[in-house]
Image (cartoon, rainbow, N blue to C red; front, side, top):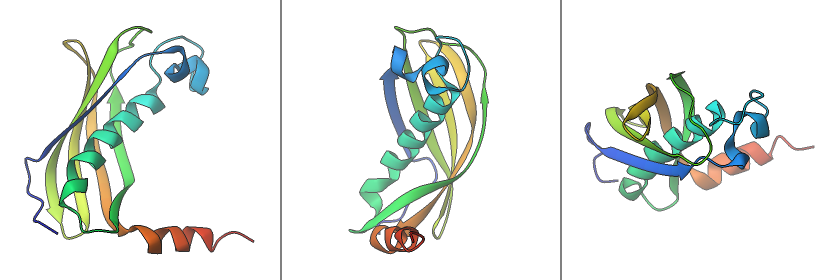
Length: 130
């Protein structure tokens, strides 16, 4: 693995549609961008930023999110998430994450991910099945 260094930036974006509203996702009743959709977009920004630096067969999994959803975003606007790697301690990665709709900050917080061996992780999860 090439060394992951603080300051590494990531981004992801999506359009707010009926499918990712609070009403559609069950996290509320209104047709505005759902908090779970914002969290997923933040995770996507962080995960995609580090993936090119991992060894073949490695990935990352999210283990912690501490995020505030600050403003509602209606259907039709585009939301972009940004991540910045703050700490890289062996397998543990900590990011600052933010989400924007245009110039408005709609969410911010911290996100933790761990580097894993994909096959081993999946085998362990599947072993839980009866």
